[in-house]
Length: 323
Image (cartoon, rainbow, N blue to C red):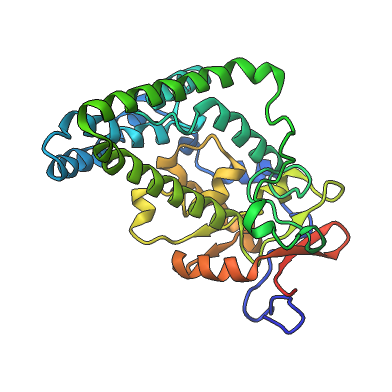
């Protein structure tokens, strides 16, 4: 880090912010055709290994937890189907995922609400004016209390969803109410401490780690951001970084080290994502960003260094940290 608050080029090499010399069509052409094939059967049978682990571990924690562990273990199943990349049709993906979320107590992350906001993130990634996920602020926009009280990128009373999405949001809300009802009944019969230990603590841990992963996917000193006048979709899709989580890469089905490919071609199922990533690297060249820094060290570095963005040239913004 230089004295002026700008990252030293010798320490972190910036990704080019110019228009890429390749097109999305060229990126897709480099990917083997079979990587686009989605199998309902393969998507459905992938969850058992993580689920099996839960079945083996949770009953040892509490003698009465066998039935409840089946519900908790299926959280992985719901997570795998939050994206159309795992299912051969949008209808199958949506209905299956909502059912999985509701029936496995996963509805505290309402599926349709997440689906619509995530779609907008994919459509506007890298744009300071339109993106919705870990959008950095300008230095002039950061009040003294920002880091403590204001983490939302939208005004608190602004609409998040459109009118045509309202019915689906209500369906997701019903899932939340159903989940709350089930948890209350379990607390009555098994005790509040049981619910907290078997559901509450794992839920906090899983969602906390999910936020960590998402933050590190979109926050890196080498990545630019753009205002709406300079932004275009392809450059925005490249404003993400693949990271190495060691053995956790496989535990998380490689969502951690194939995120660049995911943003470029979101319909590739995760079981083909590694092959697709290797195929597009030669096309992307220096536009592809991978960081092998251990995630806990990267989290500390990014939290200290990537505090705000400032323009380096017209419409292009870079992370800085000097106040």
